[in-house]
Image 1 (tube, rainbow over the protein chains, first blue to last red):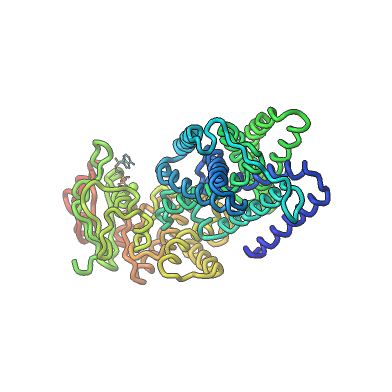
Image 2 (cartoon, each protein chain N blue to C red):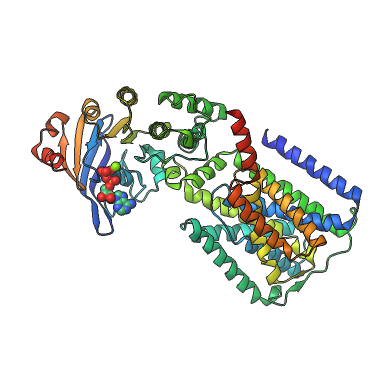
Length: 314
Length: 245
Ligand SMILES: Nc1ncnc2c1ncn2[C@@H]1O[C@H](COP(=O)(O)OP(=O)(O)O)[C@@H](O)[C@H]1O
Ligand SMILES: [Mg+2]
């Protein structure tokens, strides 16, 4: 399928999802759906670096928070429409992603992962001590009750996150089929061999950290309006870091559809668990599923399907 | 010297306290077929790694096609026309054989010359290259499905795919049958006729002797002989190095 065809198809699917949601017309659908969509963006973004290039980022929460706090900062300064905040959040997180990449990409494997974790801790400490954006007390953002032309404001936020999901998934898919995607795969498989084949590995890895960081920041930018109250502990929450890793791993990391499947599945499951059991079991659920998949199906759901098809082909 | 493609001067490389290469000087003429031999551990692969930028040498210089290579990352050296096969094959395991060859085509040939614009052209070229090394029919298989010998052929095909000016084959023939060695030698000779300079690193003396116009011997990181093959193999120092093994 051509890239533009894919984009049109993705928009059509998103439109259908939005149509069904408005038909149900319950605000709960928007609140829960927003979270699932946000995880589609985060998981897809994580996968561009983690799945395509093989560099495990434990600091997703920091990039998400960077987007959220960029929005808080701008909001205090001069309120802008959310799409503009998304662009700003994306640029800030993209630049920081580039910087983090520049400092850490000489590290491999587990050392890189630890560095990203340390990076998240440093950033969180900075935010805690930055009064202008609320420091450890947090900052309140008054969410308008409705959005002209739509209905409730949450419906608007839901629509925005839907659009972001389309952008993220299309970006991932475009990369995957491009020269860049093949370069990423070569880096994931063997960096020395990739260099020997002409792949500028450092430049490509910096591109991956920038794109991945930018998309995570974009996912975080509308968050203050969704939640109404932003404080460091929850914005840098473990759930973001863990889910961003677990969703692609469970769905499958080598294609764009893996993180999508993982995010829809795990995200929905967590929303159901929150309502029926309690929000505390969420991470436990993710942890158990992640361990199970790593042991039984290390290539995720997509990997399982591919193996089936391959076995049948022989 | 005016027609030298590769000029290595006083190249030294150490691993910790161990001196792997010591003051190596070597010059390779455009279009030459050079054999490089030496006992195991004498530094042949290390020399290749220093030439191609996979390793950085502490001292000495590498000049290729009139350009200084020192400090250039490996991918840039590949783009100016240096390509090598790894002695221990390093395929991209998650990519099919076709896609393994696609990497150098996209990142070297396409990036350098703007040729192979369409993906159809790339596919065709990948298929040609697989056929060249006798791996046609396995285009859509993964490296994991290959035998060690087939993996060597893939390694060679990936180096050839980069359309180098200088091709370094690092023990690409180990384990191959007599006829397979003949096939690879014919392939290398054909590439050489097309103007590609070739350095052949090999233990199989019959192959080296029939292929090389000149022979260089490394022992313990030092070059001990350099000249016409039949003279070099009769050199007493070379004989001693090999008998001493
Ligand atoms: N990365 C490395 N680290 C430490 N020692 C190495 C490394 N690579 C090679 N060596 C050592 O350098 C010497 C030369 O190795 P090599 O160049 O592979 O020899 P050859 O290719 O001639 O068999 C050997 O003693 C080997 O153990
Ligand atoms: Mg060797």
